Length: 160
Image (tube, rainbow, N blue to C red):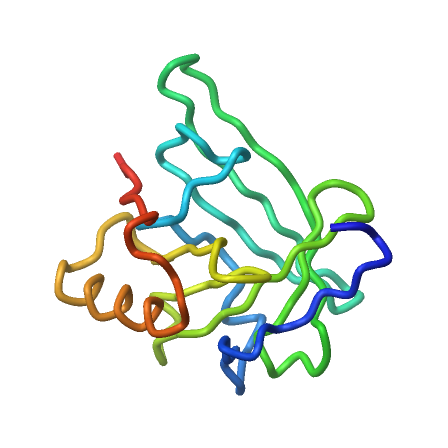
């Protein structure tokens, strides 16, 4: 996506409102995702968020490569597309290039989240803990599928 391209929320994706970035801050573990080049083969993946003074969020994505026995980490910045009470953001890890980040499901205790990117090819199921009950995971995956996430492309992430 070029720097001049605007990041927008696709019509079939509805980011949550009444979002509290301070409560969202902290570490989230990937329970499931659609694999992409930047995470391919990684296990024990997590994303950590921290509030910056300018209203943006610092993002640190981390994962372990079992083949090389090395941790891979990248730092980025997330900005709200509009009102910070709506969980529609754009995230950049590589200079001026941004991708969409939409929190479409979040429980009241801020313990589980469903995130869809610029489109449904980018998907993450996140949890504050490294495991999730199967019934809860199934319910959240069904919610993602209703927003055009192809569950055939979703992988479960190994968390040790």
